[in-house]
Image (tube, helix red, strand yellow):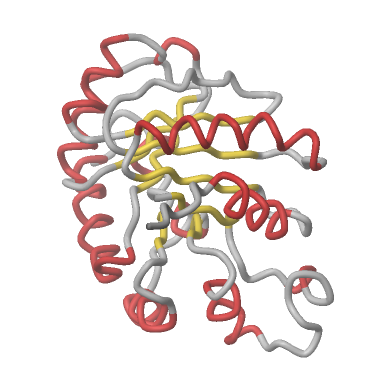
Amino acid sequence: MLFAGTSGFSYSSWKGGFYPRSLSGPKMLRYYSERLNGLEVNGSFYRTTPESTLLKWAAETPEGFRFCMKANRGLTYSAEAFDKVGLARLFSQRISLLGERLGPVLLQFPPTRQKNVALLESLLSALERPAAAEFRHESWFDEDTYRVLREHRGALVVTDEEKWPRAPLVALGSVAYFRLRRGYTTRALDPWIEQVRSAIATHDEVHVYFKHYSASPALARRLLRLATPAPVSG
């Protein structure tokens, strides 16, 4: 199953393009979820999403829709003495209100944090749900990290961003996760469509999220159309 979308959805600059000009803010998510089937929520990185908002999101979206919540920055960006494990448990408990709409948690590590397998293990254990880990320091890309992700049904995020190292596409379990952070022409997107097709063949779930440029919803829709295998007839 391929889930594709953008990082965020509530952008007034998308009106007159992806959204109709007259569409009000409260109606954006429903409109979005009728055209795309995945959403990466970055706001949860900075602040706790209210329970009422999570319940509203779950009620407004169809059964096949998935939210990938970005874990609070305290889990990976805070000082050593901070209670990261405690926050991970609270974060996981809160987002569980999304129920079956909840996809893997996006767990982003800053470029200043080098490989710390014990930290990764403790966070994945506390979250108690599949997570996709994005590492911004090359020291993480080794078998020790992959073993921990594999044990926790996690994924290694493949990020296309000029200033960050690109992780290899390593099949660790049932989930693959891509973050496509550039502006793409149709031709520039084609190699990624092929990579996503390959990932679909070897994973149960593939998640692909584009940066919140105005052209990104159209790119995500193109990806869904071209990378999703055609149903078998007969």
